[in-house]
Length: 338
Image (cartoon, rainbow, N blue to C red; front, side, top):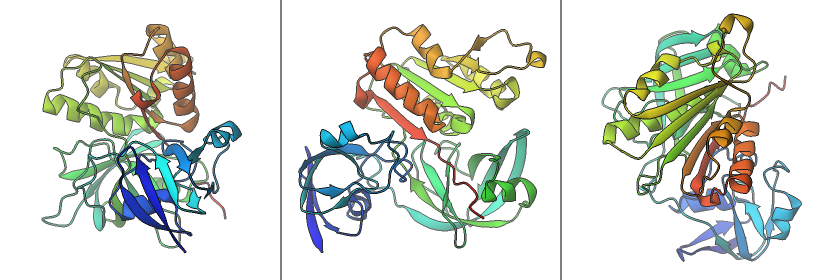
């Protein structure tokens, strides 16, 4: 059965099948809604159902609460129509003309800047380039397995190789393969670019970046892009990790300071040999310690879902950050099932 969906306030309309999600149908018809994990976990795709009914689909209760549902909210990455719909959400126009491709690539280089982090550089076929926005991600496609999503850590102007930062996750089949079996010149397939986590260049508000762990990857891409195009807005980057070695590109982040990017590293579980004299605790709390009012800022947050969720809740409730000024990409992991 086919239903009709109308997006407000744009007035755009598209048909949607009963067995597909609102996001899938919107993307299929050229309308890009905000999204990230596509798995009902991160909450980026949350919007309002003004008219009609949906099946909410499988999702994390923290991403869509019963109170959210009562107020008409849904996660469009997992909600499926049960009638014609009128929905309210802000479309992302900047990604509209970027083609999502499925392509092969070759592992060009592998580097371990930390014991549990691998930097992969992937080479596309000759005369091929991937058009993307800084901060977007790609899906690595594996035979008979769920795609693995990784943010692009390189900025679009530096696209000779696609750069991925991969953390070795306990029980993760793909990460085990990367760390134990993968070799340079191996062939992979991917789909991308994907996601709506990218720099909104039409604003002049000061920017706060918050990253945990390898959430550094898309933040790196966005900062490099911002510096490349000459953005002069104040920018403050907070990078949180457990111990010092987890800040695996610390020198690079420090170099950005000479280019006007304020940098605050934060460790939650420093070990004695770190001899750490810097900020401690949770990274988003460091932001709250420094900024009593975020109403005139925009925030880009990336990393573990618990970090992103805490930042969103505390910044919007306790520091007056407008909800529409919080952009995020929460990393989710696929556990080993065998």
